[in-house]
Length: 257
Image (cartoon, rainbow, N blue to C red; front, side, top):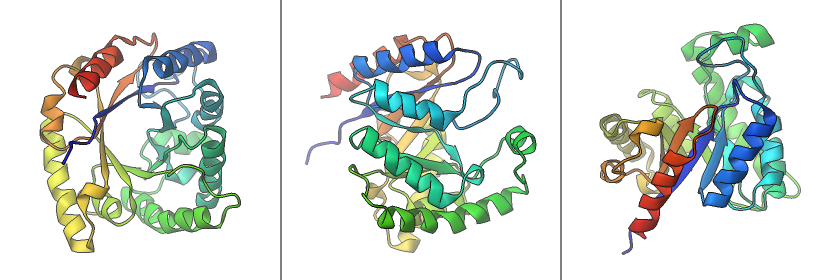
């Protein structure tokens, strides 16, 4: 039985930059052979100057859809509280058509309080946001089954997060893909918990793509991540967008065959 091919991608941070620089970066990543290109779903910078330039993620995805031809695209990840779940499913389905079937629908419970406060959403608590995510996931899936036309690709549903009691249970119940963060020791610990949840809900954990976000200085020796069951590595990077770490990942991916 052949080992599944490692996938590699890049997340471009839409802060302290320009729309033209973002477009240049995702075009370059697509031409280089990245398997995936991501944006984040926030309304303000997450680090550095809190008042730096910033752009909205799903609008950027529309331009990314038109500018690229090969990579899968998505948000890493969408704040579930920011949009009605039926609308979110429809947005992802529409972009799936614009990309020829290259979209992920990636969601998480949300966490960045400034987004909520400044845009008029109720921040609530970790528990209330997780309860909303749990209620909204079946609504998204139901809407995807009703849309005409349906998605043209697989449109995998990704859940991002590391909450052991709720988030990983929701991954086991609903997700086609799951995202967390390095280092490998963290991935191994969380994967074991996810495996337990899969056993409890009757799910084969091998059905769930394991995607891990890493820093640009953590791209050497991808074997450390392969050893803990990672399928897909995604570099997180801000402006200026250095493609060197992505090139390193692509070379290792290609050497693995």
